Length: 344
Image 1 (cartoon, rainbow, N blue to C red):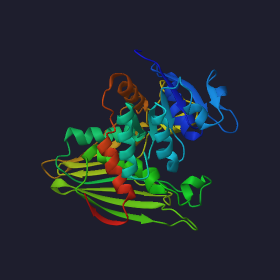
Image 2 (cartoon, rainbow, N blue to C red):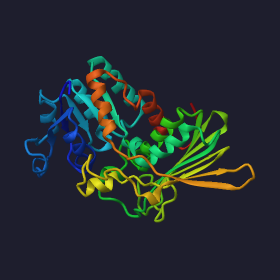
Image 3 (cartoon, helix red, strand yellow):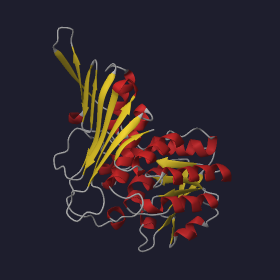
Image 4 (cartoon, rainbow, N blue to C red):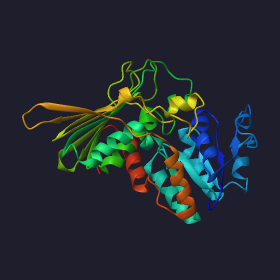
């Protein structure tokens, strides 16, 4: 590689262990050199030779680190990203990038001021199910689109142990957790909407934060996009439903990368990212005589490695990153907005 980018993780919880370290450790352009672990030092057992710092300040002060991954609780993203930029580091930030569009704009401006790159980790652009849907939409086979539904359902009917997700702190609630993913997918597919209507719900007993959201995004040419998630769905519905003048597409959530990473199956291993064939998308189109014809569309292999390729190319060759500043600002304007109707 042209350059090796020494990288430090600010945390080594689930995000660090699953979504960052496995990719950074095998990508030839990165050296996973340091991590912050305030309590038990687990990272050196997984990655011999890695430096485990006791504090984030120690990692930030390491002059050898080129890239800092901010994978700490949502409310801390702005402060740690700002600190890293002021320390002269490039930064990869977990979603949500910040709590507000104003904070995000300040970070983008600061990055330009100090001559560093800041990237947003929107890994679900590289889920196998989303890639399958995007391929069909981009192909135009459905003709003019009329209605698109994007969902991510879970069943967690009790208050979770991660207090930063359950307390009234900045960037909290389900909308900032899963909503940041789903809005990014919608914005990547269709751009900035003309307007949106937002609904939030608090349904679990004693919850302080939203555990349900519904965004209705309206686009030109009467395209209606619905983005929804609930924590009280024991039987998840289809993740993507797309209706157009020439037919419909239905796709269930099928990406298996997270499940594989939990089993220590690493990127590049045989079968990594290959979703079950039985979860293929169903494309339904109408014949001239009014009868239906259906086909199953097997997804391409999912992999989050292209995200890290994009970060590498952005730092080394100044190649534009897939997740743009405008897309991030649009997402956060929706997330920070109060419930109700809004025009852009």
